[in-house]
Image (cartoon, rainbow, N blue to C red; front, top):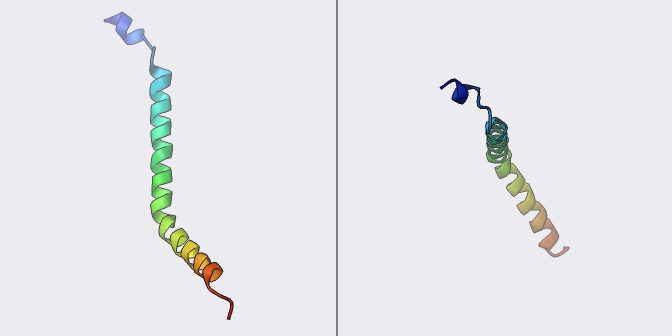
Length: 54
């Protein structure tokens, strides 16, 4: 049992998984928060570019 408690193999991989998961959640939260405004701005600029010049 003591040998299992002192065994740290896989600890670095676990830390990376937690780190990548946290960063992923932050990216998703940022896209949900800012995404609709970006889509609206993109559609507006697309419509201005695609419309004929009066």
